[in-house]
Image 1 (cartoon, one colour):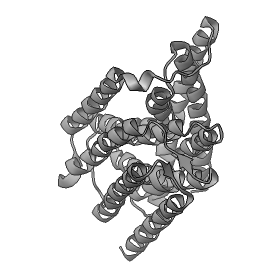
Image 2 (image 1 turned 180 degrees about the horizontal axis):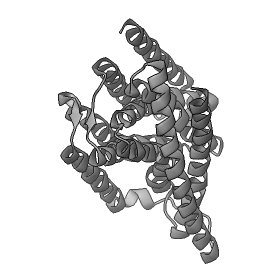
Image 3 (image 1 turned 45 degrees about the horizontal axis):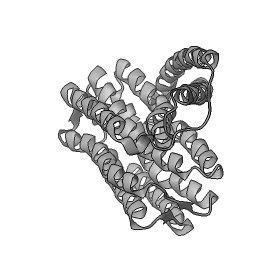
Image 4 (image 1 turned 60 degrees about the vertical axis):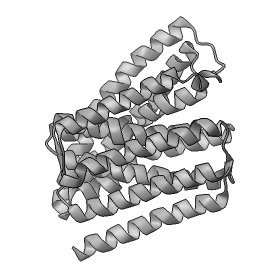
Length: 316
């Protein structure tokens, strides 16, 4: 099993590095297009930092291991909305929420996108048709964002030359290629590791892969907060949930329908994911800032999730 662990570590590092390269390339493209901070963070940064999840979904679908992507999406969403958000808030000693009207409206839409695939999975299968519906809804939401003028009011003030723009496109293509190769290796090695330790793919994806693929969000959040761009950090978290729940699961199901193989792990994960969405929603809407106390509560929430999941998996 050691060889598969080494393959996972190597492929995971390449996956994270290639997503970082992709983030910078997309940010340069966004600067050239003079898009706003919130659009950059919600569409580009969220999509880019969720590239590992998306490509793991694609790879797991083609390898007939779709439940691995489901576990990864559930685990990653919980991780981002609780532990990652909590750590960033504590690190910044609280974060102020600007543009609150926009965020309050959008967080309900994102919550809907996050919960919908869980509703589809009540019959323990996410079909190709349901996957297509999720993809359509995701792009409909992007169109809604594009037509909402408030999102474009605060543009990133950084000019980019045409040569930098073209170079960024080349780097973007290289980053995509690295993501494809490394994500395939991650899925392959995780499947072998799960077989060796006799655990379900959904549980493996919920923790092992989710922890690895969520590192970009943590790094981005800390950087955005340090630079006093809290809007970008909140926008990235909301966008990450939308991308993961709608686009990643939709594409995965379209390639290969997702079937629940471990109902207990799924139910626990689904309940905590809904609670994480509701708690984050409540904290955002209640005041104009996220305090360190709320950050601490989010971290405790994730610890409780880990303990309960571990207890039930051990009992099973």
